[in-house]
Image (cartoon, rainbow, N blue to C red; front, side, top):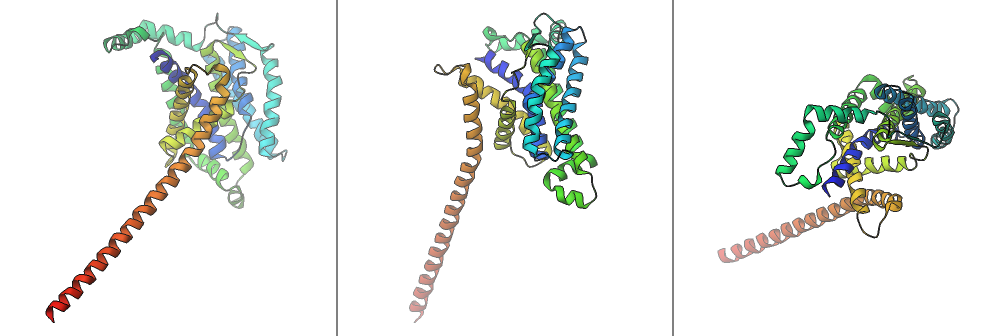
Length: 343
């Protein structure tokens, strides 16, 4: 069980980068960007083909981030300059990226099992530095020696990378440019009335969003050991599930808290899916159904909780009014009794 939870936490922290990208497009820009399903694979395919060709995996991963940025910008250009509906713009770009990704890889699947990736480098460093032996010694001491993970380096390094991206996102959204992008998502007409170039903000916002998505795709391909043209199917749903679950569980009072909630939502989502797949009558083919149910619950739960809270508040106020009324009647009776006694 511990190994399964550990693996889902590790995957969740990587998918959290993709979820932050989805948060930027859906919540900040209010743009339902379906490019995600394509740009996720673009990041994976660019990184995979460069690594197989002998390029340094770190350079390949950064190149994948750039490729995702370009894909997002193209979606923004189609929407702003082509005057195409935002939903349709994302769909068109997603379809186009399917063929582009096939062109990049040259085939539908590129294996990375025999290639050096970021994670093989991290694993080697983790083993040599003694981090793995130290963490495993702690697990053995608490009675979990039978379920030791292969390495701790990947999890620890991805936590650092994901939170670095989170802090950079928080900082960017508080800058003048970031505030302009946020304002564009809130009220595009108002920003235009101030002579601001909203088209540029939309393009830049979508570029950053898909850069994070492609970066996550590149990391997932290296973690899984392959890049596949179909690995991006349903990524937008997973991203939305992470955002919705995180917002429902951890709140959205500030940007800093919201981005942290998105990370938490991605981790919770992966853990829930992992636990659900351990149920006997479910199998890996049910993963999309499980995702749909999780999203449905995440959407319905806050409304049900709010409705229940409102009912409790109304009941408490009603009880307080009744108590006040009874106290008032009691005081009147006492006053009448006092007057009669005086007479």
